[in-house]
Amino acid sequence: MGPGARQSRAEGRTPSRRKIFYTGSTTPCSCPPTAPARNPLWKSSEPYYDDYYAIWDIFRTSNPLLLLIAPERETQIVRALVDLYRHEGWLPDARKRQLQRARTQGGSTAEFILTTPSSKGVKGVDWKTALAAEMHDAETSPADHFKEGRGGLGRLASSRLRFD
Picture 1: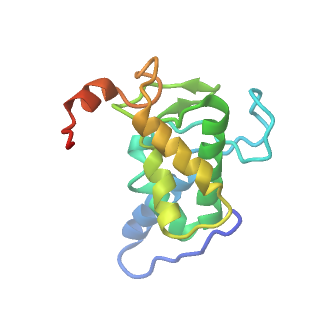
Picture 2 (picture 1 turned 60 degrees about the vertical axis):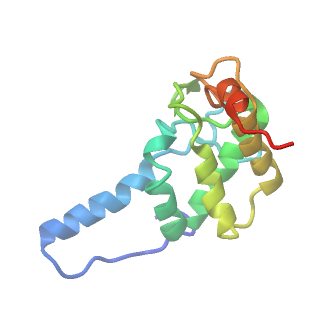
C-alpha cells in the first residue's frame, strides 16, 4: 500500500462478492502509473505520471476514490497535471506511455481532477497555477484541438449573448 493510503476491509456477503469488491478497489490505484525517473523531457521536483490513457474514463470514479483512500497519491497526480501544464502549456485529456499525447474527446477533463481536491481543501498543490491551467484550457483556442484544449471555442464565443 502506498504512502498515505487507508486500509479497508470488506466483510459479509460471499467470497466472490468480496473478490469483486477488492478487484474493483485496486484497479483505480493502477492508473495512471507513476514514472518518477522516466521523464526525459524536463527536470522537475514534481511527481510525474506518464499514462493517463483517457482522463474522461477516470475523473468521476478513480480520482474521487483515490482522494478518499489514498489522498497523498491523488495529490501527487494533481501536482503532476499542473507540472504538465507548466511545461507543455495545456492540461492533458489523454496521454499515452512514451510521452505521447492522445486525442482529446471534445476538451480536457483534467480540470475536474484539479477541481475536486481544490474544493476539499487539499494542501501541497500550486492552486494558483492550477486555476491558470483551467482558465487557459477553457478560454484559449488550441492550434490542434484534437491534441489539446477545447475544440470549437471560436464558435462558442461568437454564439454567446452579449448584454451591453
